[in-house]
Length: 308
Length: 308
Image (tube, rainbow over all chains, first blue to last red; front, side, top):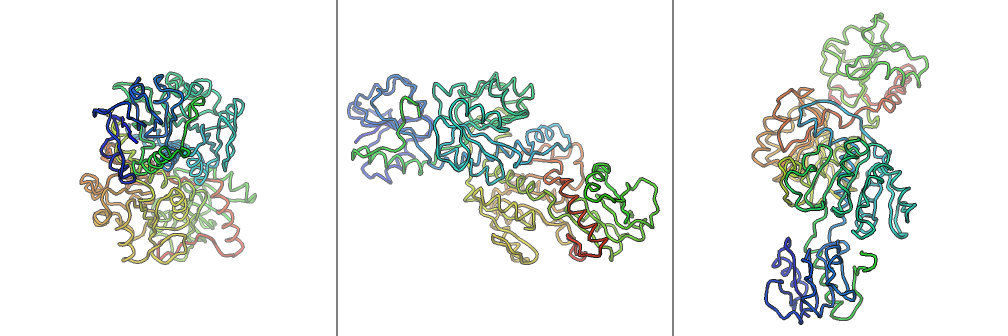
């Protein structure tokens, strides 16, 4: 079984080494190498360019090198019949949970204000919030969101979740459009961990910020396209939102001179909230390649109509 | 029973209101009001000036409005026989625990580096650390330190403590000079929650920073005088320490133009890690005033020879 690898950010040799350790007969080539496209059985990809998949007429699976698959599903050249597989944890849950906990603590302890005061050499104490009086709404309580919720609950926060469909969770999860409103209306801190789909594109917008309790905080570690940036700017400047911690952006790297870089109410990280741990990722990928070869059930298979 | 109140930062009427709610016959006056000094039974104080206590020859107790009592014990005018009482929680444990958790997450997620990159509009991902591969050493595992340890353990950190004398704790606590070395040598993050005494003044110094594992992080939310600032600067600039989160300073407010304000590896807060929650504080103070009037045992009584 032969595979093709595409990533601009992941190193081919690094991934090949980790996968070969689990699959001694691995036959995986970087896309730049000459090979017979008709002999390619699977693609292991991150952000392949549009039209990539039509080069390989006999694809039996496309495996994402991370949790997101929007970069795969957005390519119209991929036949509907090819299974698309996402990573479901790969060391990302703990990282996301830490990142979200960090953002929540930054908010309740007013750190964005203190950082701004430090820049301006101002010594002034401001009001604290208390975790136990703060509700965090997690949009997308999947594997990553549930781990984040656990950590937040251990820190004393009240946690709500919103999912498209009912889910088993150790905290209150609302569903449907009415449930979405109820979660937003109670969330002092809103965390986006949703998959990017037609329905969720632009879901973080003025209408949502207006319904949140005053002086709210936004944490986006899903995709840049979930957030309407002009609406964020208005909400920050009007004081509806007190701050935001953003890991993802419509254009990455974030362009030079973009207003987000220098807004004192915004903390930015360069898409590092959950970096794929190559070894953890390769465990799941190797299992799926064996499943594919043996005709067994695949894990992390995306429902193409839902988009995740 | 009559009391005198002294604080520049706490509002007399605010404290009086909260205490009166618990003690309807409260007889407490601000120090600026004329009263018979010989009739004063107790002092409720924060940072009273040297010589303050010698005005009141019949003091039966001095109550601190916070956890620290160094501001009281450093006054030679206070007779050894007068009990000094400190607050043992008053809502401070949760706050300290949040502050320490925030600092630990800031460190392992490289936020000081990302904040500096944001200022300079640089998009670059750096290595993460993992909580489970990070040891936090808590110097002073009292009520506040134990709560901090609980939160850190819930976030996946490994926690060690150091105390002068053996203590019951749910984590490994070392004692004595040898134990101090063992904790320092293992602590990627060192947290100071010690009382300020003759023995602990300057305890955070070059010798300690040299013994910590490389790229360490310091969190000081005890007293400014615990830390030798010149040693901190050398350790930051040499890279021995990667960063510091500081809430307390030798001189407060931190003077204009001080190097700490603008050092990119230092995050500063203006002595707000644990603000006294007046209502929680007044519960403990009211209980102690009743104990004092009734001749019962007092809580939070400081051992004058130990200094805490």
